[in-house]
Length: 151
Image (cartoon, rainbow, N blue to C red; front, side):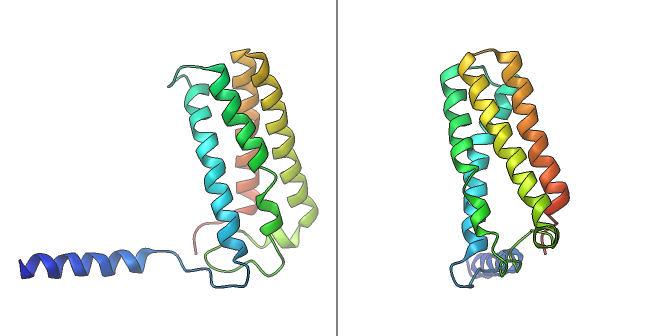
């Protein structure tokens, strides 16, 4: 019994060492934007399963997720403040060094989600797949340019 408690205690200690840094900065901008991105992922992933044919297409449900993503997609950018490039952020310095390009990437994503919502309303699955791929591409492009590996 004592051995199990010791092992559990050591495992807990090791896991806590693997966790990311806590955001203790005023207003916690990194924490806020990460939370929004996680919420966006909760809308994005189910659409990806449908677009790839792993789950059946339900127009109303897909539209609901697309609208959620569109609404959430306007929110994280306000938390990329000049003083928010610290652990646990994964943002590259390019976010602040190239603000025009970062703004363009944001706009490209928001335009793609707006188009996806519009197409999702039609129910044309092949167009929905195409427009979902455009949203996905905008995410990948932004991540490649502006998101780094965990620190």
